[in-house]
Length: 99
Image (tube, rainbow, N blue to C red; front, top):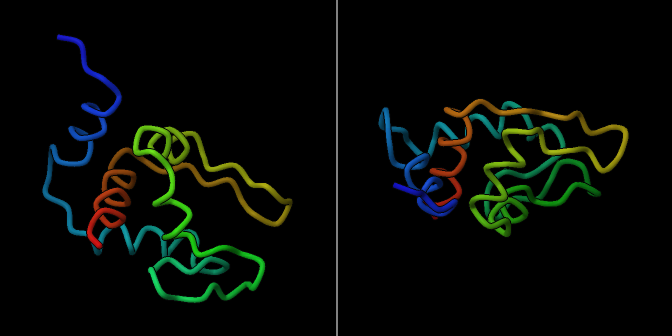
């Protein structure tokens, strides 16, 4: 059987161990909240940093999975490149789709 990127994204999001949206929020807080807001209505601690919840929700699911796995690249020198594990990606997707 051939799976489309959307089907794989769905499987990645809803298979294996049950995750809670709070798990994904915690991953983003740990890795990104020093500069970025990670909830819908929050303001980023660093004025120039966009609200990450809003930015990540704008990506198509399959593109976001790729970016998170490869390491969302830094667009400036102060932003570290963070690569997330498959489990972390699943939890982030669960969080972003919980609202």
